[in-house]
Length: 255
Image 1 (cartoon, one colour):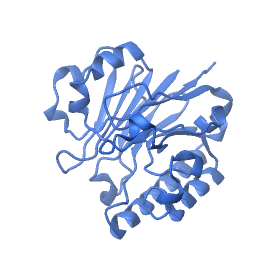
Image 2 (image 1 turned 45 degrees about the horizontal axis):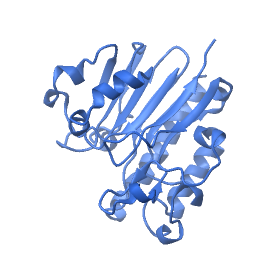
Image 3 (image 1 turned 135 degrees about the vertical axis):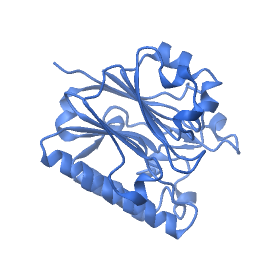
Image 4 (image 1 turned 90 degrees about the vertical axis):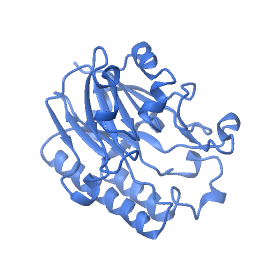
């Protein structure tokens, strides 16, 4: 089973750049998309009902902002949008889809750069995610938590760590939450397969950073510990263009 996650920075924009052809060629079993920036009523039938996929959408109340979508070849057993908490759910950041072997959370975590209030919102959102996944595990469920976390965990995960120590996305309190996330049993599966430097998923478009590979690794697949024996590979796909992010991939094998 191949699962991809990609912050597309606008589903309508990336559609014009060949998104559906890419989806057909790549043919993931599941694709988690973040930052759709669209409501379903703004999309055409080819996106709403792509060949071979069931699609679940969660849009923000605010037009042109945030939003997530999950494309899956197998119809989910259940679909839930949001955590059930209004202050988070109005921004369209979460889709939870349940499959026979696991629960998949597709999440577009908040960005904390705007001001202290948004940074606290981001940290509160992190805490709710931790509580939500802990509850799933207490029910005996395994989980994959995929998406744009908007934080680079360690110095290896961005090109210029020293220059960004006071920037949201690499602040000590943000990184400390990911430490807790790991301590509570979630595995950054890419790092299980690739210890190399210069492995990034986001680049600043304004400065041409992608051409120089001056980037950040902020897009992840985290898995709960019980799923680790099922994972066969995890990769970053930097050759895929169309957004300021690139997709990340995880492959699992179930009996």
